[in-house]
Structure formats: C-alpha cells, structure tokens
Image 1 (spheres, rainbow, N blue to C red):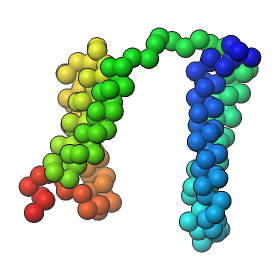
Image 2 (image 1 turned 90 degrees about the vertical axis):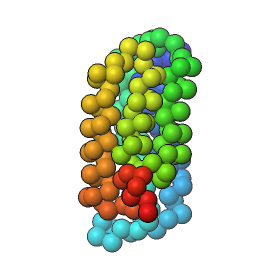
Image 3 (image 1 turned 180 degrees about the vertical axis):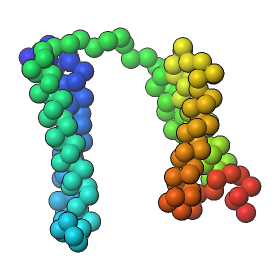
Length: 152
C-alpha cells in the first residue's frame, strides 16, 4: 500500500476527491431544485459529484495498475512563474484590458519551462488572447475592457 500512496494518479485522485467532498459539503445548505427549475445548489452538487467520480477512476486505476513512481522533483522555478502569471492577470486585467493581459499571462507562464521557445509561444499567446477575448467580451458580453483605451 505504501508504494501505491506514492503513485501520482493515486495522489491526484485523493486531491480532487477531497476537493469534491468539500464542494458537496458546502452545497448541502443550498436548495437543489430540479433539472427544469435548478436551485443554487444544483450546479455545485453536480460538479462535485462529477469530480468525485473522476477521483474514483484515478484511484482505482492506480490500484489496479500498480505503483508508478513520481517522475522528477518539484522545482521552485515553475511554481514561481506560474504564480507570477496568475498575479499578473489579477493586477493587469482592468488597467491593460483582456487581450494584453492574456497574452502576457501566457508569456510569463512560458518562462517556467526552460525549453520553451518564443517562436512557439507567441502564436499561442496571441491566438489564446483572440479566442478568449472573443468568447468573454463579444459572445458573453462581460463588462471587461478589451484594450486599455476602451476603459474610458
């Protein structure tokens, strides 16, 4: 059993299973409703149940397959740059607009990977920026500025 506990799929399953149980517990005080008239607890409960089922699949897969050791060690560099990209998004969204902020987020997060090449990252950054801007600003109509001069 000790070897299974070190399996990444087992650990992932336990982690999202715990998250699902917290979500289920938090949604118990909300009215569930029906599929036709959903209450405020319907979607959180449904998502928590789906997460719990996914967790069970990962845990069972790890148990049936057997232990598989973790690959590599955790590094400070990737954690730092990914958290920095999230902070960038939080701080830059309203001053700079969604398009610039998403492109910056992708570029900052790419620094976490030493072998990342700017030739591969730039199209991803601009493409993701365009697609997400289209979804959130134009399709959903969220009140998020697209570019800095649109703030006025």
